[in-house]
Image (cartoon, rainbow, N blue to C red; front, side):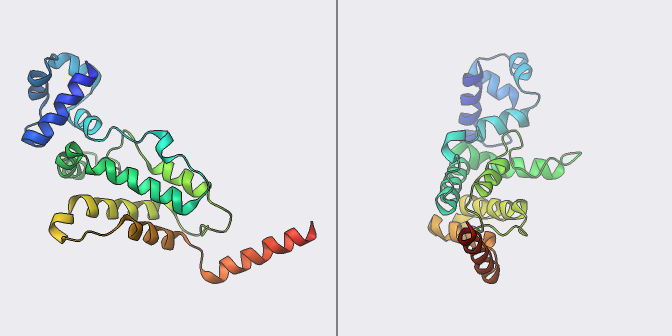
Length: 196
């Protein structure tokens, strides 16, 4: 029942758009009774969110300790999630809903499967001294979310096709400690090693 409902929701989003993807339309398309849909999803928005953004496979963004590689893999997975046809059809409507919801929804585009903790895990696994401790990971994630939304939703308007590596480089620059701090941290690591 779940997969039939989610598949019908994705089809309707792509074919008819966000506004036309109602629980009644999903029920008619999937053959699943509306009451069965409401037992599984509390609202049309929750159904659309799950259908459009099923989330990352935890394995796909498992930190390796190689910051550049992990950030690149994370961005690729994040962009793939937003580039899916159903996600592209749903994102603008979901963002508008979150802005007008009373009370306003969380800052995540799809709060049911937040990838913010996975981004923090990547930073925690990075080699010592490669991430500035004074940088707020949530601020960097917000910048990354903005970059991903721009690359996936506004690229037609901006007509800018930039390699993912540019976004990776931008995020790494935000995370880097100032040059003097990196050098002093490396000196202290060498001093500790020499004492051993």
